[in-house]
Structure formats: structure tokens, C-alpha cells
Amino acid sequence: RRNLHLLSHDQVELAKMLLNEGQGHLFEHWPEPGVHDDKKKNFFDQVSRLNSSYPGGLAAYIQNAKKLLADSKAGQNPYDGFTPSVPSGEALTFGDENFVSLEAAGVKEARNAAFVLVAGGLGERLGYKGIKVALPRETTTGKCFLQHYIESILALQEASCKMEGECHTKIPFAIMTSDDTNALTIKLLESNSYFGMEPSQVKILKQEKVACLADNDARLALDPNDKYKIQTKPHGHGDVHSLLYSSGLLEQWKNTGRRWVLFFQDTNGLLFNAIPSALGVSATKGYNVNSLAVPRKAKEAIGGITKLTHADGRTMVINVEYNQLDPLLRATGHPDGDANCETGYSPYPGNINQLILELGPYSEELKKTHGAISEFVNPKYTDSTKTAFKSSTRLECMMQDYPKTLPPTAKVGFTVMDAWLAYAPVKNNPEDAAKVPKGNPFHSATSGEMAIYRANSLILRKAGAQISDPVVSTFNGQEVEVWPRVTWSPRWGLTFKDVKRKVHGNSSVSQRSVLVINGRNVVIDGLSLDGALIVNSVDEAEVKVTGHVENKGWTIQHVDHRDTSEMEESRIRGFKFEKVEQLEVNYTEPGKHCLSP
Ligand code: UGB
Image 1: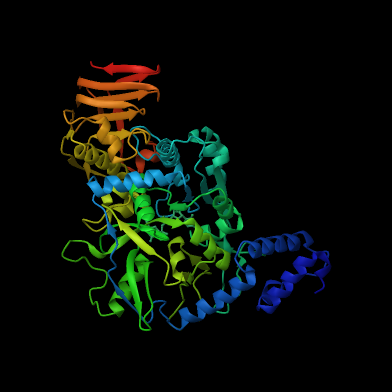
Image 2: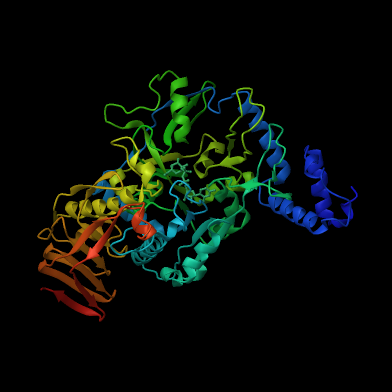
């Protein structure tokens, strides 16, 4: 009370709110006015920020926390009353007629889309020093994830506009960062001229952390190193909805004729193989919500898409997070819990957190909820009395929980595709990846890169080219298939139809080969490759690649992840390339060219 004169009117209201919500302990140690006044002001600046960045403000946060902590103490399961069953969704087969026509429908719609990348996570499981979007997607070209994402969006923009006979649409791209990733993400964009995207197309939304909770009464925790600061921790990727709402971006997108919002995560190098067809599904089925899924191995650290039926008749199709699926199944008459069925996979499709939301209904819903997402709390108690925590906790939320508040009339669906085509995240460090049960995906930098080569090789095979079988090799304790290192720029092979048009069946690539295609109009016709070939061309050039190319190529060197003399990017994948010999050709002039060695 004696310190009130230091505060603005709004801050006095915040102080009253905190006292009403049982947070008097925050001020107990405050000395008389004149002592630490700056720190007291800083404290209220932080309280103001915490208040304005949470839908409903800090009072709502504290009240929600009290309820969730009481439920957790009482051992209440959020799925009480619900019975899980296997949902049915759209299952796509790469390359068949349906897939090709959905891709065409998706590309057509892309000019009405906006993309949102959630990239606020620190990647603790990976333990990489930098931001994850700056990691190379593959080390043949060394292009980072963010560059690949931006080039893919630009390729979609170009193809979509061309299809519709217009040239002015710029697809918006929002990136959610956090204090952990914001500065480095902006630096990466600025130092690379936004990878060819117009800077005005990109919007950065920074998520704030939320207050930590010290006990079951939701008393806010003070920072152990600064008694004038509330301790904070990340709130989770679910923040993306409230940020899109509060920034006004959703409304702006709606007013400029956008129809779809596509959310995706930081390190899935295969994702854009799945975007055109999945958007095609949303458009043709009229889904308000469409989640992408892949067959899931039991215990794999990806959520399971599940149909939940409540005793009172309510049903919903929703992600059940990987740590909750097993207990839910065991509690509802499945004694084996999260187990594979006769197909060798869990019957519950794996959520890859790629969501396509129809903007109209989404923005209407957010007008009601302001983007607040169903939350959870995960305190680590000191003992079974559940009266004290080992360390402070906080509320968390996930972006895929958005459909939980939707009415039963909402059209919520999902689309399943092969994992080899659509999903290869980089999340686990080498030690943890090597411990993954045999047969389950590693989700590491090693598997993430090898998956790119496998997918591209399989796509070329499907297009008719002869691609040699892979060899099996072990890097950082992980046994992986090594396919020819084939990679291309998104504007070369955006859809399967594009690839098919540019690859003729009389071409072949040997296992030890490297093939980089970097140019829009490069046609592979009668090429037989045994070595390394890199083709660069300007968009206006038409290049035919034919004949036999043979050279010593690139070799793969093993790298021990503990070897600190190596680059971190090589250590986390367990290998690097030695470029012994290669043929690199550059076509810088428009017109027709032929590479025929
Ligand atoms: N992220 C943020 O932007 N902010 C945050 O506060 C936290 C994360 P993780 P997770 O598809 O592979 C999810 O940590 O949460 C970003 C799904 O919940 O990589 O363990 C972060 O930068 C799970 O159902 O994943 O698991 C990253 O881009 C499953 O689908 C993204 O959020 C799994 O992903 C995901 O964060 C998957």
C-alpha cells in the first residue's frame, strides 16, 4: 500500500487484482518507498506484459491454474467419461489419380492461403545451439529449413497464380517466435534477403512466456535470482491462435480474401510434399479443420488422432498427446495400451501437427474465444500427497487442441499419408535417437536428412526413372537406408505431376550418386548418372539433361558426434560429404540448352 504512488492507474488495478487472487506473497518482502523503486516498477512492467499477453489477463490465468491444479491433485483424468476408438479419415496414396487431382486442386487454392510456422521452441531434445529453422534440411545443398519453407511457399504462389492467370497474389507467411528464437530468426531472414520472399509478406509474432506456479493455490513463483521478477516458462505452441487473433492478422487475411490458414512446425523437411494434396482435400471436402497424419508406431513421440465418444453421446476427433494415449487406452479396456496392431503400426494415425483451418469459421470462433486454447498442467509433485512441487510448474497449451472448443457441427477431418513422403522431423539428439526402439523412427538429424533422399528417390522411381536400391549404414548408432543423394528446388518439383513431366523413364541414377536440380525447367531425359551432377539454371532457360555422366562423385565420411573438432551440423547427423569429383553446370542465359557430356 505504501508503494502505490509509484504506480500508474492501470498498475494499481493490477496490484488489486493480484491481491484479490491470493498473490499477496509477491509483495511481502517489499521495503518502504525509496528503496528498490526501479525494481518495483520493473516488476509491474512485467506484470502488465503477462496480463496483456494472456487471453482474459492474469486473473484468468490464475483462476484457470487453480482449477487445473485442483483437478490434477484429485487425479482427475481430462479424458474421464470418454472412450477412444479409431477414427476414419482420408487416406491418400502417393502418385495415384486421386492424389494427382487433389494436388492440382490444392495448388489452385494455394493463392488463397496463408502459412504459419510455429518456431518458438528451443529444441531442448535436440540440444542444438542455434535455432532449428537455421539447420540444414540436407547437407548436399546445405539449404536450411527456413529457406526450403520459403522457397516452397513461393513455388506454390507462382504455380497457383499461373493456374488462375494472375500475377499479383503474395501468400502471407507468419512465423511465431519466442524470446529464445526471435532475434536469431530475424537475423537469418535479414541476412539472406528473406530467401527471395518480399519482406512485407513475412510477419513475426513473438509469443510471451507465462507465469510459473509455486503451489496448488496457484501462487505465482518469484524468480530465485530476482525477487522482483515473476519466474516464467513457455506456454506451448497453442499460443499461436491468440497471437493471430490479437495481432489483427487473421482479420487482415480475411479482408484480403484468404480462405485457408496452414500451420506447420520447425523441422519437417518433407512437409511440402504433402501440402498440395492436403489442401486439395480441405478444399474438396470442405473441411473446417484438416490435420495431417502418418501411420504411427506405438510409443512414437507423436500424438495419436483419436475419436473420443463421451458417455453423454458427444464425440470429437482430436489429437491425444503421446504421453496420454497409453494411459487412456489402458483405462478403457485395452490392457496393452499404446501397442502396434497386425499392420505393425498403432491403429491411431500419428498427428504431425500440420493443420489446415478454413479461415472464415476459424476467425469467427476466435472472435468468441480470443484464441484461448484448452490448457493442461503437469506438476512434478514431491510425494504422493501431491501437496508440494519439486519445481515450479506452469499452464501449457498445444495448437492442435483448437478443435476442442468447436461445436459438433464443425467439419473436422484428417488426411493420412505415407511417412516416407510427408514426415521426417529433427527432434532427438544422437544419444536419445540411438536408444529409440528398433523399428521406430529416430526423428534425428541423421534420419531427417536420409529421409529427404529416400523420398526424392522414391518419387523419381514412381515417375519412371531407375533409381538404385539403398545401402544400409549406421551413423551415430542409428541404422538408416542411404539412397542416392537426390535433391531439387521446390520450383522444379512442386507436385508429382511436375516431376513426371520433367523426368523421362529412360533415366537412371546409381546408389553412390548425387543429383542436385536447381532450376525450374530442367528435363531429365536419357540421363545415366554414376557420380555427382549439379545442374543450376535460371528460370528462363530450358535445359535437357541427357547422356552418361560418370565421375568419382562425393563420398560419405563418418563423424562421431562427440568429436568437437567437427562442425555441430555434421556431428548431430554423424556424417559429412567429401566432394571428390563432380560435374556442375550453370545455365545463366534464357533459351534452350542441352547437357550431353
Ligand atoms: N513450439 C513453439 O513455437 N512454442 C512453444 O512454446 C513450444 C513449441 P516440439 P511436441 O508432429 O512431431 C508436437 O517440441 O510439442 C514449436 C505435437 O504436440 O517439436 O513435443 C516448436 O518450435 C505432437 O502431437 O513438439 O510435439 C516446434 O516447431 C506431435 O504431433 C513445434 O512447436 C509432434 O509435435 C512443436 O514442438 C510432431
